[in-house]
Image 1 (cartoon, rainbow, N blue to C red):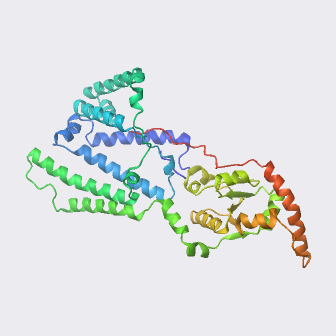
Image 2: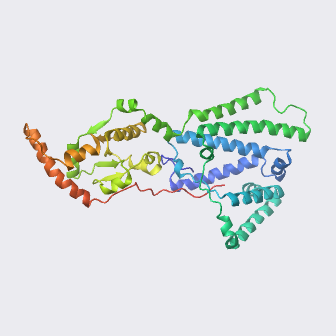
Image 3: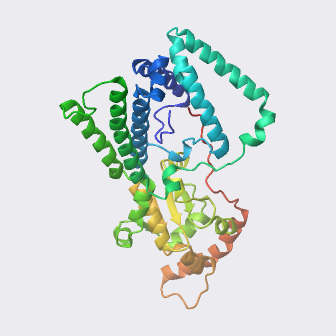
Length: 396
């Protein structure tokens, strides 16, 4: 299963779900005719493009699905495994894979599917796959240098092209629809079919309409992170948002009192945080809001989350972002850490108090500016927030 943000599927139940999905995947391959080598080889000879249509359809449906789940915060895209790119080896591997596909009539997945229903040729293909894996593993030292050459990281195509995710999804879906039309023309020509490839019947018009709607839907669900970051960059929107504030005196008192219910999220750069980390604080970043494990951290009940940064505007932006994402019990430090340093840590009495309340405040500040620095020295920085979850290696 994908790394869903709400833990809908536990790690234990995940294996059962994977088994069911694998079974259904095999059924779909069989129903699509992928257990027949003639069907797969037909794509290369031009008389049957079912493989292209099925995989193109699976690709853009999965793409739109990921975009929608990401938009609604139901999927942690950062935990989705992306195969690292090694340019040269990828090209050579693609050529070998293509030749094996044409000669054998199967790919690894379809060969297992065909073997399950008793296809002898598929069984030989599986045997050849196993032998190929053994030869590769035993001879790995010979071609290890080439295998690891041309590393290009884990780029995403829309980032490489310098376009938005939504535009790329739209273009890919459009290419898929055009390819369906073109391959239908090729099939008809090679198979001697005189009927037009595309006919204006309710069936074809319905399929076209669905494809267009899928393509357009890419613009309806922009990436979640960019969507919310754009919102908090609107100063008018941020300033009008109701956000609770905690005074520097209450903040200092809770630190001195070692209030365990108050959790401080520090949005300063990591190097600044390490130089002065407040007790019961953790370094937090914008990215953490869109990741699975930090999501759990902000969902613990009976806590007061106080967002701090050097200035109040940064705190307010982060608080608005958190509340827009559905988090609760969020407060910001009035005036930011700049005011906290000035009025608490570097407090200097410049006049006599006017009343008892002011006298008590001045007295507390004089005590706090001694106690809090000691607590800061004793505190061990906690951050950035520790992530136990990692991308699970895998993929077809």
